[in-house]
Image (cartoon, rainbow, N blue to C red; front, side, top):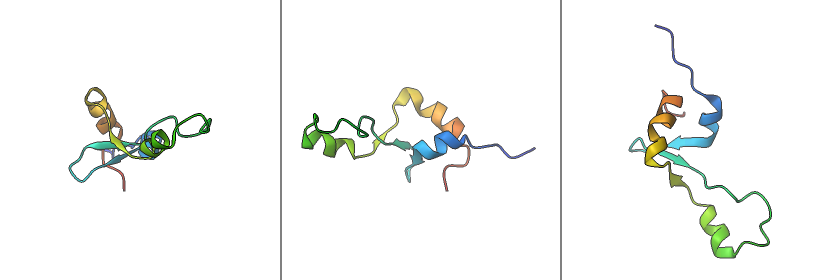
Length: 67
């Protein structure tokens, strides 16, 4: 059976935690930062887990995890 291909777009957006859960970066940190508070910008820097409803879809796109 041939190897499965990783979705490259997903590999750039998601990482797997040591327990196998998918982590992602938060949105809204690219531009128009002057109107956002310092606290909000700092919290947008942290990674968060992918929501439960999307976990299976992300795992299918990353069959081997991410190196």
